[in-house]
Image (cartoon, rainbow over all chains, first blue to last red):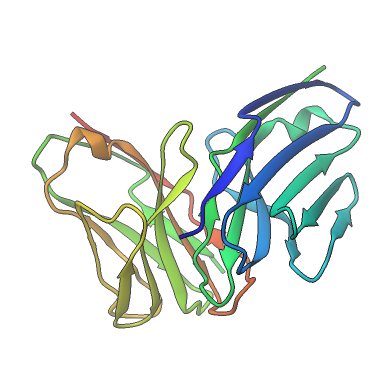
Length: 112
Length: 113
């Protein structure tokens, strides 16, 4: 099955700086890569996703890049704000499988 | 439109007790799934269903049963609770198409003593 590794496990950044989270996956058939944000005590919620036919996608201060050859994808948050403090999960979905395999999560803390 | 709902929010069980975690969705999603979340381990898939009457095992199915008698409901049963099942449980649902957003319920925090 798919194996997703996520780094780092914790990340502390100064407000206004950028944050980068990296994930690798093992199944070359995976073609959908969502990112979920989970605030303390809340449910995970999708913040951005990318499909295998796209190399980069941006939505305001967040962007995701995908390198299919190297089987890794990354989340970039620019101009971080206190409300960006949360746990972020990457995931991968093999083609026509519907099941998501999640990374272990990254706890992001934005220091004021 | 309530989305995905779960009950109860919190539960404490003694070892060996059984219980059912409830999950319902009102979005007419074909795909429903159960995850457990443990510190440092992300979200691990327990069981999933692609439609009424169809269920299958995920990554960590031992000690859990599921059924899907309707499109809306997908209960998770703990047969004989063990301390290792102490976790936060999330139900999720989506349309049955590759690359669709999964919507999560609010979670159930379960403690087994």
